[in-house]
Length: 182
Image 1 (cartoon, rainbow, N blue to C red):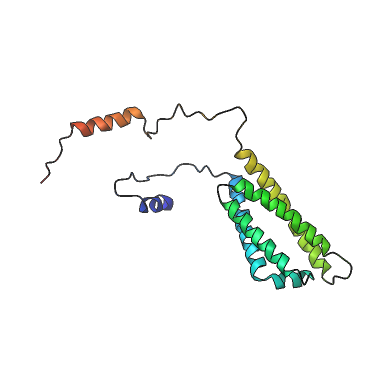
Image 2 (cartoon, rainbow, N blue to C red):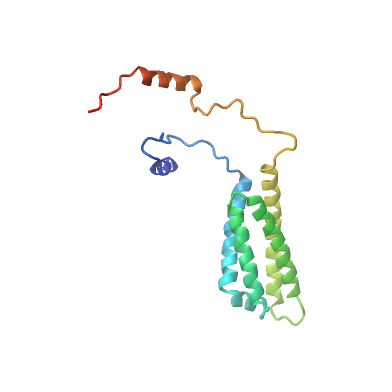
């Protein structure tokens, strides 16, 4: 109900009004892509704004520039995951997860007093990687074109109630006398 009202606000005076919205074409994989995109933007913002805190928590001081670069990557992947190119955004998240894992493994050395934090971060990134891979595969499958098949639109008219109903409306308008302009 609310979406119909919002949709009608932006319509021009002569445009048809939205009475009822139909079923969403937004699938579960698309919703997951959107959620992962927002998560990526949030994580990237954290890495961009507080890299010292991230490196201190992981016992990896001196890696602030790398964390900032990873923050830029996260934000870019998140924006791409929210766009129509969500497949590319999700696969870029998977690639970024690989970089994150490789960097975190470097922090597991014996003389790191916070290697338990690194291990915890590594487990979290591994879990997110599984989500990223699953979402990327689902979005790729959902939005892939079948080779050799073409979409056929021959059965569509572009008229919501059919061509006959539209012709009847046009005929009624032609038979109604025009108001004299003054």
